[in-house]
Length: 205
Image (cartoon, rainbow, N blue to C red; front, top):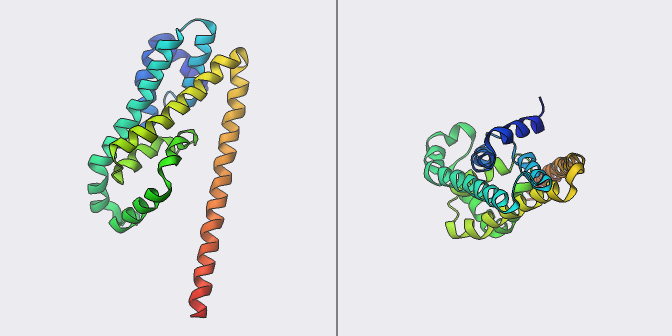
């Protein structure tokens, strides 16, 4: 049974509540049902007239925002103490978190508008922004906005493309995966170049 079959069966049994319960589970890193396919299939059900678009969209948005809020709260409440106690086993130290937070302060807020589209990142971004103690008003401004964009895009794929939603969804998923791989390669190359430059400068000095 593939993921789409799982989503279809869950909708048959639970209707709108799949969105209110399933999407938070996706953010908590228990992606059953998976968020992208759940939203797209929701749009398709609206296209078929089996769901009303307004409650379907609002339930989806509420479920996604709830997921962000739960993971942010967990990270905020428990993340730093856990890092202080067990971080050394993972080479994660308070100094590393502080450096990460400063880098985030410089570049990160606007990234929250897009990171929910990145496979794997969506399940951990809420914990991360909680651990670095991102102010809640910033979460509302950027993370909730990014969540709304994510919900709207995948919901619209199902609704706009109708019977072709599976084909379009698969194309989008492949594109996102390839983009993630490309970004990973670029990041590794960037870090490698920085390391080479640092070693070169040390030798010169």
